[in-house]
Image 1 (spheres, rainbow, N blue to C red):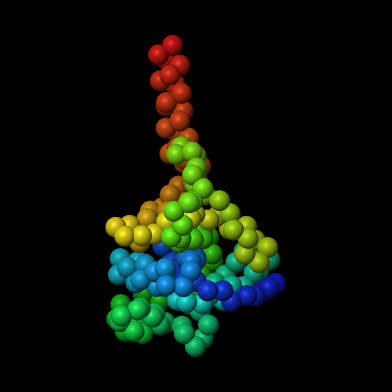
Image 2: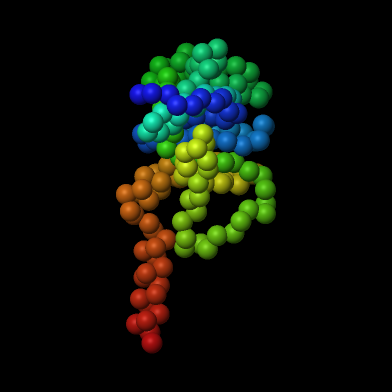
Length: 178
């Protein structure tokens, strides 16, 4: 595997359902706290706060800078050694980046047709990565939404699109009524 390009970005990389999920968002938005919740549910962390991304000939691989590997910083708790607290299965050295989740507090998010796929793309080192933008705020269970997003992405990648199926059922019902 030949590394073509490398860049370190601000974010968190977790493994969910066999997928590498890169979580992005402004500082203080809750990326590390979401990672902590995901780890407590049995998922794993690759990197907190900064992710080194290597673009290979085929895909993107994310890993933690050596200095911070295995650590998670949580406001109010301080630094956590993830391996000591959750065990070594909760840690991974690197992972292919399959999906990007961007957390935002922007209440003016682009409104999509509710039956259309919410997946967009983000350019990372010249590679288009599927991306979802998720609003965060009081009462939002961001970890559950991210976990479900990974499951939906896997289904969607396999050609299973619930929105299209529902739209077809709706169209058929309208045609049958006429």
